[in-house]
Image (cartoon, rainbow, N blue to C red; front, side, top):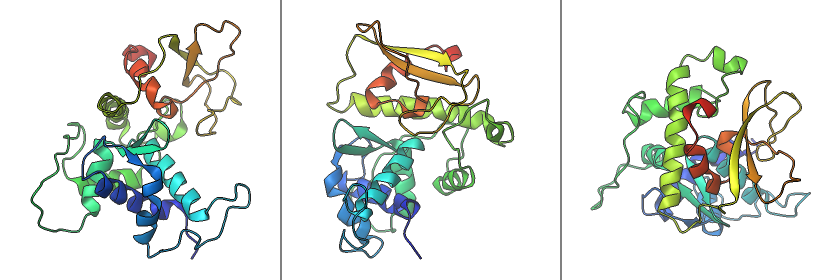
Length: 244
């Protein structure tokens, strides 16, 4: 059976937790993650699958990078600056469910989940596995209209943004230049693509344009809220609820 990025998702979260000493918001250089994450699947050589034909990079590394992108989409991880990764409290919570039961002297402190979700990490994990768009909703999407956990998911997205902003506040990453203004806009063209994830917006879905106020000729480039660069999250959190 061929390996996919999904196979590396849990090993990645577990590796980040171990390298961060079981703390959320601790920066981990991504180069230190690949080999121990691969080892959790019994892979001891990063060239096990050869090189990617387009980039020449190890296929194993590419798969782990894709797994990290998916973890960011779920609100379980963030990218801190250039080349550093970190778990959010939600990602740490997931990693805790993967850890083998051993006696330890230090007990990691995990931020509580919002009251709209069960406290049992196992049940939260089931919610994520059974809901492909978990934490990445669009109120205009047909998937959202039929989703049984619409209300909790909407609140969850706000919690994820707050959590990511807390991680950034504890890191050395700057919050972004003062000349950037985050402009919410409704999408009218179904061909509009988010430059981060590459997925199209639905009609009237809300997108966010990081507008450089010093460049009057700049054309709008819209991102999904969960795809904005980390330094934009404080600006996103500052928007009124009606703009989200």
